[in-house]
Amino acid sequence: MKWVRWGVREFANHQFALFLVVGTVAAVCNWAARLWLSVWLAFMPAVCLAYGAGLVVAFFLNCWLVFPRSARPWTHKAGYFMLWNLFTFPLVVAASFVLRWHVLPFLGITLGTEEIAHALALAVPTFVSFLVHKYFTFGRRLPGAVPAP
Image (tube, rainbow, N blue to C red; front, side):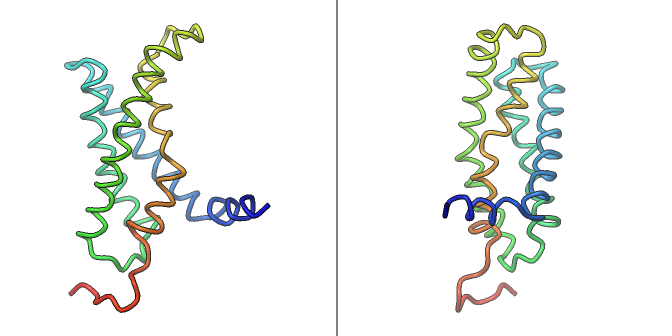
C-alpha cells in the first residue's frame, strides 16, 4: 500500500502532467527530426541524431515550464540532464531496434513500423526520468550550498 501512495504522490500531480506535455513536445520534435533525417540516413543513424534535437527541446522546456523554481546553476542542470540522457539514449536506441525489427513484425504490423517503433521507444524512460530530473537535475540545492552568482 505504501508504494501506491508513493506513486500517487509522485505522479498524480500538475508537475508530472506538465512533464508529460513537455516530453510529448520534445518527442514530437525528436520524431519529426528523425523523419526528416531518414530522407538521407538509414533508420538507426537517424534515430541517434534526432535524439539530440529532442534533448535540446526537452531541456529548455523542462527548465521553463516543469521545474522553473530550480535554484541550481545552469551548468549543473545541463550537466545532469545530459548525463541522464546519455544513460537513457542506449535504451531508446535498443527499444527502437527491437520494436522495429522484432516486436512489430511479430505482431504482423508492416506499415509505419519505423514511425511506431521510434514513437514507442521514446516513451520507455519517462517515469524514471521524471524522478531523476525532479530530485537530481532540477532538485533543491543541498543545505549550505553557495548560490551561483
